[in-house]
Image 1 (cartoon, rainbow, N blue to C red):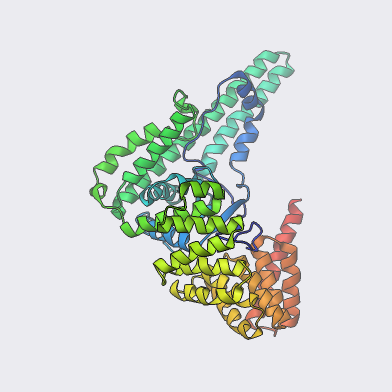
Image 2: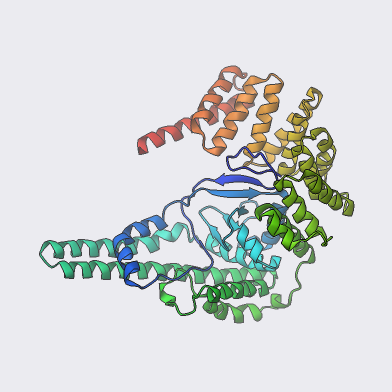
Length: 488
């Protein structure tokens, strides 16, 4: 497990990647604060409403993605029955972790559910997270991102019409009347948009409840999480707000709408999946150790706590704080508790690798790779360790391991970076260039992708598999670059 924000994942714990902007975004924030109705806020609303409506339809900004083999396995385990219940294919749907402390989840086009790390930290059970995922799958299955224009266009149309009429009145000498027309039109436009989003959110709630019931998963977690959100609303003073001035229904309304449906289903009495709940507690502790400050982690898991979760959290906390001996001791305690657990072996190997002991890291990482069925993220760290030993005799194994990793994971630029490194050390410059082109293409570095792919084309055997791949990257990257120039 690694960390970075540039796609070349150096560092520790979870892999961090920047998520490229998507074409749209829906379900952003499970609960929203009110649109304030004071005069200052209204003036800002009047002045910028058209821009705000257009901004809502724009791509989401790049965000930091956390990748971790155990976490992704947990998401797959908790989402697969829900995905099937939604009539979607588990092969096509992904649940991705975003490094953000806010309590949030969203979809942004395609079939990917994005879950913020803050939501995992706030949830107390895996079943609560399943309720959130079920809701987001409702957005995907009902095509809410694709249909977003049905909400933005009418609202924008009303707004622009009011601006034209208002400006005409101002030009005719009726300044106050013109300003009133624009203000009223913009308020109507905003109300139209907010009504549209509330309807979509209610639809996703209903769909999520249906998926839970169909999958035989209790809806208790869904209601529990909405009650936690309701507590947040009370905490921050959202108790006397206009429910029609929100992007989402208030949590109390959502609870009232869902309670009968969920409680009447046979699934309501279903027992929690004990294995999933155990995995959730491990992942939650691991995530705290990575995202929180060491002091915060040690307050949550003091050294007197000898549970698996505490060892996990402290191992990550000590590791990122620069205490390798303490991190080593916590990792050893994990491996001692279960010598065959691939994720315990992974963190032990990762700590050794980043402490400058790659030769010692090879054995636990090889075992972790084998125990995880050659999970691409775990295998990438293993390949990294093989290269870091500076032992040329290990390089062929590194190539084999890393090629298998990139073959099973189409979103792993760090694996391509390591593969390029080992090819370069082996003197295979054309394939090193192809690996660089792959990584650059994946991270949006178009110019590097073009240059590296063209070098590979010029030096690889014509019509070979690698040559054809280099050609594909070169053409695609060049087309992207040309499109960008046209847009400018």
